[in-house]
Each structure stands twice: as structure tokens, then as C-alpha cells.
Image 1 (cartoon, helix red, strand yellow):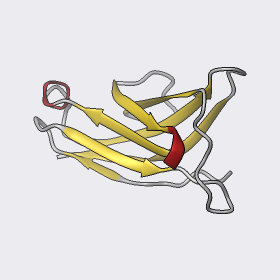
Image 2 (cartoon, rainbow, N blue to C red):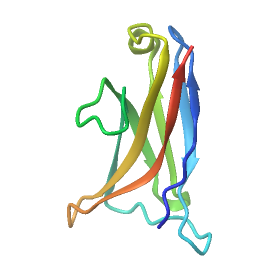
Image 3 (cartoon, one colour):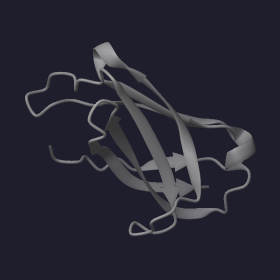
Image 4 (cartoon, rainbow, N blue to C red):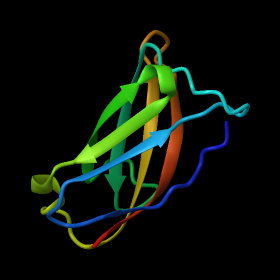
Amino acid sequence: MAVPAVNIVIEKGADYFATFTITNPDGTPYNLTDTSALSTLRKFPEATTGISTFSSSLVVATGKVTISMGNSVTSELDMGRYYYNIVITNNNTSKKTRVIEGMALVT
């Protein structure tokens, strides 16, 4: 599955949330049964550790993943360009799949 690049803008000091619909190549919703999601914000794409982690929630039936970050977290971010991704982990097999990636601009 090709990983879509979706750029986002996070306002410093404001609550942030975004919902993404994850689909299979044929357009059907991605199977999110028995999965969890992790999304991290990094200063560089190749960084192995994140600056901050988004909270995430899944809607299994529709393939929707929502990431969020409260204002207490965004107020601590320096303004500038970051990178983020969303990784889905199959809780039965531990297989990790990156489903979204992109730049995050903190303004």
C-alpha cells in the first residue's frame, strides 16, 4: 500500500485534531479490527525519536483514524516545520504499517 503524504498545520497554543480515512488500494475501508494507532511528531523525517505524540482513536467499521493534541501540548512546541506519521499496529501479529505521513507546520 502506498503511503499518502498529507501536510497539516498546527496552531501553537490551540487544540488540534484531524481525521483521516484509511483505504485499501481498491477504495474499501482499511481493516482496523484488533489494531492500535501511534502518531508522532519529529523534527526530521529520519529522527528515531519523536518530539511529541498525538493521541489517537480508531473507528474500525469506516477505517477512520483521528489524531489530536491538546493546547497544553501545542503551546510547548516551537514554531516551524516538523514531520509526522501514523503507524497502525496489528495487535495479534505486531505487524506495523505506516498509513499516513507528511509535514506538520506549527504556526
